[in-house]
Image 1 (spheres, rainbow, N blue to C red):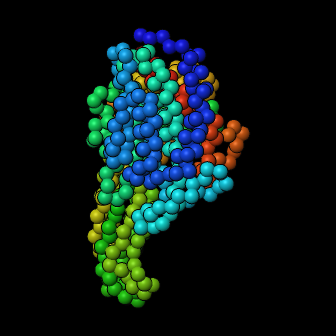
Image 2: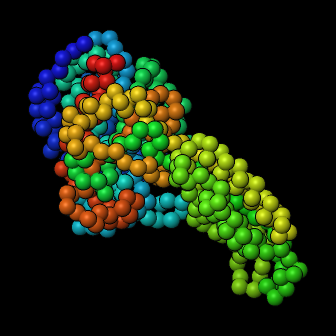
Image 3: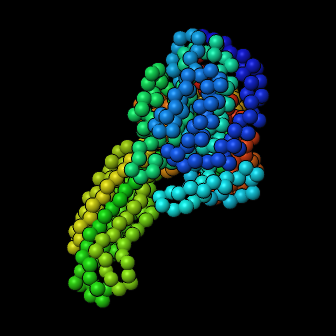
Length: 411
């Protein structure tokens, strides 16, 4: 066991704060979409190499992994940051505002770090620099995971945490536990929010294809209307939530976000397509909802003379914080942020692919405050006006640095 000087660690963190903010601004000004984070990955790799870390590039296409081996034997802890941006056109007057344009699904769009991944990247780069100065005092190994495509890879491509795991990011050396954070525009700077067990939802994307019989709009009796069937299916799916899901146990959501059918006002078309998402926080509820959706879609279509199929794609699993790992490491967060600033939260129906790591090894994921204290009108994530208060980044560096050190000393 190694006794660390908290004063020395804190001095190093204080000294690097401005550099972390500069990194964040540079990354923010030059965002890149999922699986296309080439310049971002290059910047990360150059930094990690300059610190003397073992560096692997091209992991899961554009991911970067840095390995810091302590001089003493011990466990292996991983720290993860996501590095991709979103197809959102930035709308603010920041001096480092993104002006980047790119093509996304055939459409020209602005590109923006509208979810704070630029801050996650800069924070972990800072943590790597701080810990690299104390290599001789580290029990075990720290693995820094800079992951692409958290927002999901482009259609037809693999990516994100799933591909990182497939490419062996949790192996060689084998990781014992993993930590991750997400900055939150609605949580005041200085605050950390967490939840044991299910914190964020499993996310399923679904596609429903409905086949009817095309006919003239003036003679609906001579065809089968897939638009009518779509309406009945959409209405029916909501009864699964309102009448079958045990909502006192956990929340659940079914949303149809896209409906496509028809070409002309006086033609009943032959087919329709519905695309949407299912959000669940309990494995048994997830299984029930998917089973009932499958039964309902085919049955409703048949009742109105048509046919329908439904396919599901798993985007994320439940972000499940290991209770024993939370109990073990909560004192670290309370020491770093202050006990009154580390608060429990309710589960959310947003998704996070950090969950795939947690299916393999124990993990602890938490929210980091990014809202200026006193602000009551924070802009949501994934919007053109999204902003965070950069004074919150230092606490992110403090939290991740101390989690790594304390875990390796306690494990």
